[in-house]
Amino acid sequence: MAPPMSARRLLEALRDEGLHVVEVGDWRHHNRNHIGPWGPVHGVMIHHTVTSGAQTTVRICRDGYEDLPGPLCHGVITKDGRVHLVGYGRANHAGAGDDDVLRAVVAENRLPSDNEANTDGNRHFYGFECENLGDGVDPWPDAQLTAVEKASAAICRAHGWTERSVIGHLEWRPGKSDPRGFAMGWMRERIGARLS
Image 1 (cartoon, helix red, strand yellow):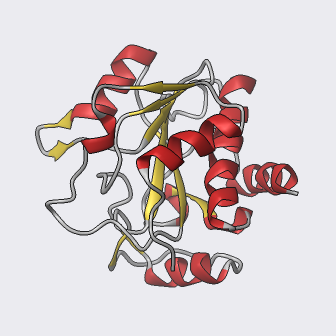
Image 2 (cartoon, one colour; image 1 turned 90 degrees about the vertical axis):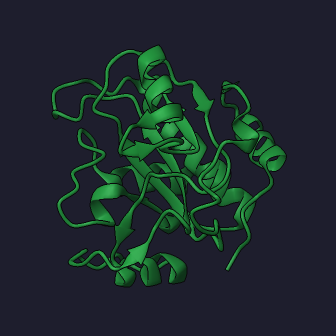
């Protein structure tokens, strides 16, 4: 079990990994903590946004929707490889997922198939939304994929985790497809290589 990093340490960890980080508004105090606790944290979750355009994507992820208030993640990774920090604390990104998957992430074991949604993921994961339409056609530029790798590695490095602590939303909750356009196993290999 690990308490979340402080907002300052999160920012430092991302920058130390060589990322271009954009601080959006009062991101350090923008959260859903009044709904429930954030932490202990056990991993990093990667998503796609089903949006296009950096400015629109960042705004939506920060503010959310009428029926799903923001922040919808901690950081937004746009196609240019920038990480836009939009929240710190509990965020509406993971939703409910499979407790067997959470146990595997905690133990850093191979992931089982997700077949139920009985556990609060917003409490236990850092979340990164990635600007992509999620249709399997919209490209993932090298700069963006490298930023996904670096952001995930930064958090794993700070907590002493391996790449097995990084999962996609599709591995957490039945019926989810994100991120679509690259394989999470391949991304974990990249993260593992960076960590070693």
